[in-house]
Amino acid sequence: MKSVRYQVAFVVLALASSIASAFDPSPLQDFCVAINDPKAAVLVNGKFCRNPKFTTANDFSFSGLNIPRNTVNRVGSNVTLLNVDQIPGLNTLGISLARIDYAPNGGLNPPHTHPRGTEILVVVEGTLFVGFVTSNPDNRFISKLLYPGDVFVFPIGLIHFQVNVVETPAVAFAGLSSQNPGTITIADAVFGSDPLINPDVLAKAFQLDNKIVINLQKLFGGNNN
Ligand SMILES: *[C@@H]1O[C@H](CO)[C@@H](O)[C@H](O)[C@H]1NC(C)=O
Image (cartoon, rainbow, N blue to C red; front, side):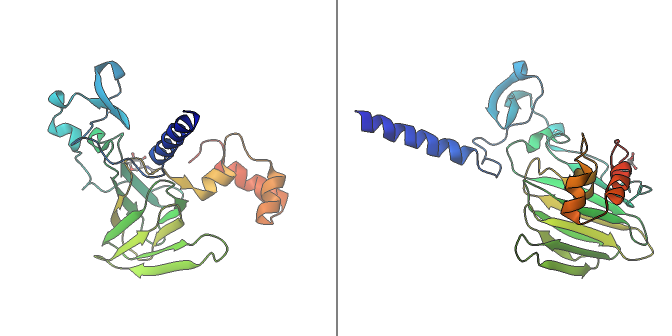
């Protein structure tokens, strides 16, 4: 009797750990349009789901991704991410989409990672130098120059960037393998955390003078991104 109970407990634990896997769950129905008001929801599989009877095409669409975004900022790029928050019909479906605009002459989508999604990017305009770095201990930098029509994959979790190397604006679109891939911009997370990380920690980690760390923290801290 006791061993049966242990076996049941083991199966429950195994199920729970597969539910808590790093990837979005596979949908258990056609769709599960996300809804903010749980009282109006009928199913739960990810976010709360809208009653399918009240779902319309608007839940699955977005307009205006053809419009160039403003790239006048300190890095010279602008990411428009359409995840489950913009398109509630993406809930449970494990996919999202981004448009990225790059300023002429060095517009940069700075080094960042998506903790929950692999990215596949296609260049539409401009010429992008792109790359990602593999994990320890190799830290191999895998990079390429991309022209319109070229496609590149950034594997889940790896640090990557794109920079526009021509004198005209660049545009790319990217698919990501999560309804909410998340973004960690390395410089903002490290030097602009809230509250700030002790400068001694960062000085030692990056082998920098404390004064340089404090200057970087002034630049990236205080919600000025
Ligand atoms: C991105 O572009 C939009 C529209 O052009 C603008 O409202 C927004 O402030 C821009 N974001 C950044 C980070 O520059």
